[in-house]
Image 1 (cartoon, helix red, strand yellow):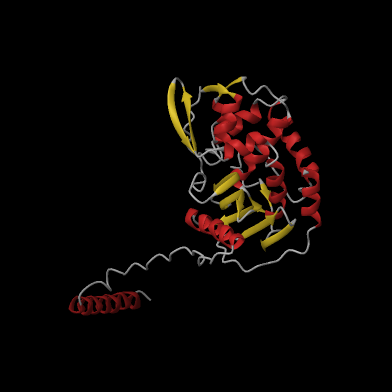
Image 2 (cartoon, helix red, strand yellow):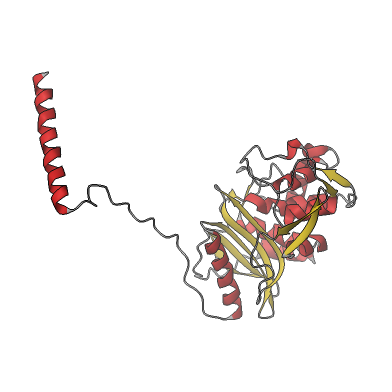
Amino acid sequence: MLKKTIIALLLSQSAVAFALPFSSQHAIVFDEESGQILVEKNAHAVVPIASLTKLMTAMVVLDAKLDMNELISIEESDVDTIKFSSSRVPVGTTLPRKEILELALMSSDNRAASALARTYPGGKPAFVAAVREKLTVLGMKDTVIEEPTGLSPNNRSTAADLLKMATAAAQYPEIASITTEASDQIAIKGQPVQYHNTNRLVGRDGWDILLSKTGFTREAGRCLIMRMQAAGKRVTLVLLNAKESAARILDAENVRRYVSGEPLFAARTPAAKPRRASRYASRPAKHRKASALAIKSKTRSKSSRNSSTV
């Protein structure tokens, strides 16, 4: 089934470039039943992919058939030294691999993703080699993944390639289950901590989400991979480089509405920052006049001084 779907994606060149009001700079929407691309926008441009990377990390780890109950500790080497991002998983935390995977996917924790790669048989070099092999198998020719978190801007792909990755990831029951949890409570050093899905559409009324992963870095913007069911159809969407979280959510909403035949919302554009009035402009007219005279007088004085030194 997966192989047939990937082949359909590779061969589908009759995509309808429907003019959806997207804020995302790159997008693609795939209808599983028809095997057609419903929507496409700059889908073949190679751009940073941020934490969408973690879907590949999860697939490679699961492919290795590792013991999911094996205890893994978060180490100093797992701390982000690229973006210096924060984490709610302290160094020294020890959890079963299955919970580390959950933290990496559901709450997109970077330390958890790093630990998964570090504890891969052969370490991170072997992990990266396995990722390259997986990219080849999936036909993701325009994708480079150098590390497991997506923090590096060198992790790059296209919306079209990421559609192949999303289609493959959806075949893993563990990934589908974890990424569609709205939240979960995990014991961290003996204390229960509540973690939430980074996609706030998960669990929302009216949404039937079958796979989800968000991503964000300054270089990648706001990104989203999502597989969902709407109006009896199963579709997968990839949205890259929206400037705001709200714009990314609105784009996803418009995909759902388009598939369901509902009216679309207007695209969200970032609000322009109001121009800050100068202190001079904000003064009363009589003070502005006095200031102008003072500036003129100062200019004349400065001109005189300059002339005297020639």
